[in-house]
Length: 277
Image (tube, rainbow, N blue to C red; front, top):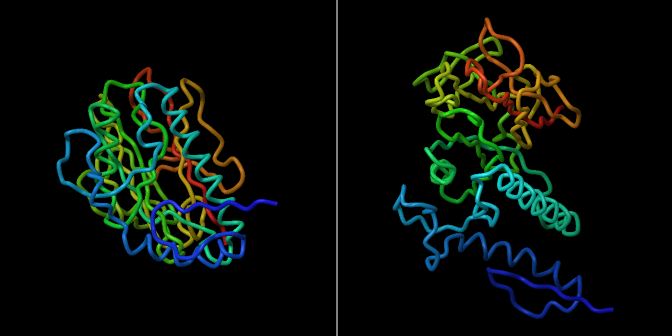
């Protein structure tokens, strides 16, 4: 049989002529990549002219898909999902060397008058040393307002994980923390999810306190946006830990519809995949 292995970026020594060779050099390769995270030959951080901060970093390939159409958004999500599938497969083969489970560490919001401007705004918020994973779908879609995208960073440390995301209707403007029916949520995404669409303000907050919210959990593993068109409100959960983001107001119940109060707009919901005890 023939064995082939390739390493892109980083440094390795010796020849990889067998599976045992690949395993023995993998840890060395990972450490060399971590020690040289920035590539000075790539002027990253600038997808359009909005920011000229000369941040030297690399973006995942799906970020370069044109998302001005629903087909483009679907293609971006398909590429990202294929990457995550292959990553999971690779981690399964190298399970003794690679971290197996990642959780959402922090959540961010990007806004702009165009899809590319909103994406650039979102990516610009990634902390140094962390990749930003953009959630597919505009949570302000089918309105005349800004494009509004969500994104997140990840961690393998359960103590750093986000445990619940909630939305507040007409409540939370300029607040860094807010207290509602599920308790205190000390992390604000900032920005109105209904920005400039003619509807009431909607703000998103999250917590890292264990077992908070409508569906108590110890972490969130993923987020997704569901655009239902003019359909009715979704079920509160769909299995495998997926639950809809809820309203955190004392006087507003149910799944948080991101275009609430905007006449004739699509119904849009945010789902979070929770890790239970």
